[in-house]
Length: 88
Image (tube, rainbow, N blue to C red):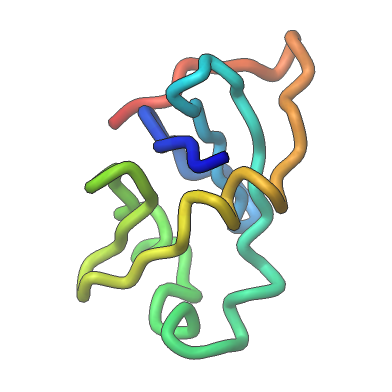
């Protein structure tokens, strides 16, 4: 099942808070990917925080992206007390 990302918010330690089109809010840890190309180009907080939603997934400057199914499959549900408003 392919679910588009609707909103995204960068968090400390290279985590992303995501809201998917089905209403689920989940957290994705980017740290394992930041040593690999092309994600090594966003391995600084200043660049990582420039994430935006485009065509249903996370995109950074330089057209660096990650598949929405990876974001969903490898993320964890956010507990209700950590569900902060994500922004586009």
